[in-house]
Image (cartoon, rainbow, N blue to C red; front, side):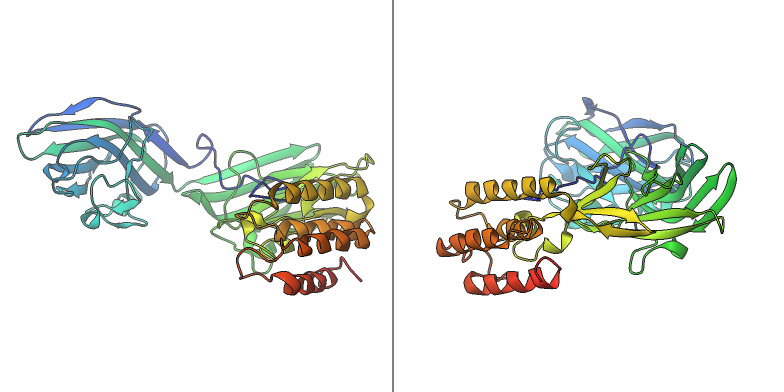
Length: 427
């Protein structure tokens, strides 16, 4: 189940590892560099990664009693100067808040945000467009010494530069590779701000290139070919024999981005007779999946949860999902959830514990978790038990609270019954 935003399978596809990505953050770390009264100061940040720039963002923390006295500029390794802020903020104090680099920094980004001229000190609530476009630096080399210049135009006040950061994306081809036995798989792409495009898939067997295709040719209908997010903390490729035929499948995990949705997997299965790979799609929505050999037969199942329950009876944060277990057989993914009653029963018990814990909390909407519990009982072949406890929740009034976007009371009972029939839980 999922309750209060804790998923069954956590798929951390939106949390990249900066050490491995073409987008990296470079920082001065915490500083105490005095900005001389009526003078200027420069602070350098050395970037040792090579490649043409595709995006630059700047973050600063400056302590000063009158921001309107300050002019901030970024100087690239090639010597180009970009004006970030020209005496903005009037008599307001500070760029950013907090100590050193750990607080709320002022962010300059040409991709989004209001112009810095429209902001007010301490400029820590969102990103701001600088006076001049940082995007004009695109194409320059990232490698070298960058400088942040802070100039104080008037005498009477001194300030301190506490922190400066650069976030730089480079227009380079990145690859992620996995090898198992004779099979080697590769994912090549370009990444900007952790969003990838120009995705290319390759699979080799015993050194022979068998699959070599852009994602657009094999992607699922409606799934993006660009604008994807990958798990850059690890390699989003798995090689595993899913069906026990001693020909391992290659799994490419992809993520569309967005607040929750959606993750999916392209599974490539080798056909020896034609010496080629064919594709099967695993679509997980919000839920994600994990590989686990639940029945210890040497063939892993793909363990997920039923994403159709998300938002069906409550807001996402209050939604719960019954388990959904898949097995690759005959080149297709088969739903084998009912073969694993212990998994279902454990989920049902957790659902009921969650309902029992939160039903007295009037701020919690328990309609989502009750729906998943009833679905679990249908999967276990115990629909009467599900309806009995559902009726108990109804008589207590637990199904008549929460946002009226979703059905309440008797309307909830009718909607849940129709939903379970439509989605194969009830005949």
